[in-house]
Length: 266
View 1 (cartoon, rainbow, N blue to C red):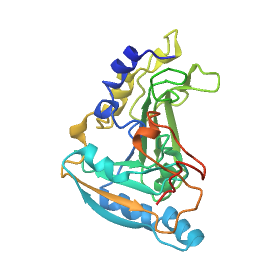
View 2: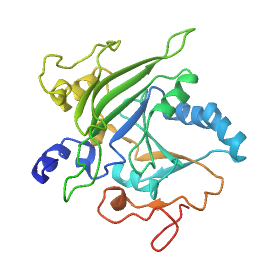
View 3: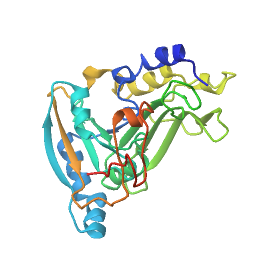
């Protein structure tokens, strides 16, 4: 259980001060300029699958806003099922593109990482969620602090790397990874007695710095104040709910099934 005071201290270190959690809880960084990353999603294995199975292509559109928070607002509403929109944002390093999506529990990066890997593009996911389950007055999230990478190897399958800590079904923090060092090196404390201390927020920041990433600094994102949204175009199913940011944060009730208060996804 996390106290409100501990929550305030924790989220102060996160992107946008945690105001856009869970959307910003996991950020996917694609090691390619934005135009190439967008083209790979639309024309690669993901776009081909969507066209084949649903009969409608993925569509892209450019959005302009004053800051990152305003760009993220273009993703709303969030989805309770498979995300229907991804936001691609250029970073201060033009060789890295940040990707956010509409998952109401936070982005699951593993499928997108494999989509990009099949296109020969390396990607890195960075996640930092405070553990707030069963914490009165706080949004309910399972804790996770982790960096993962799919490294492209010529003429071989991509190699996966993981380092971090997470809260599993036991409701306790557990160490995850450390068996294979990242190519640029691994930063953690294997001698720490408590699992959460083996990979701290500071360790995560240092790991990202080895790749030239600053995931928790707002000025790292959208230097041109633009983003590209890639979205599904087929009609949504009748039982898919649209969720506000406040609902995703546990600040308002969520209605997931048809009935009073249910809002179908657009």
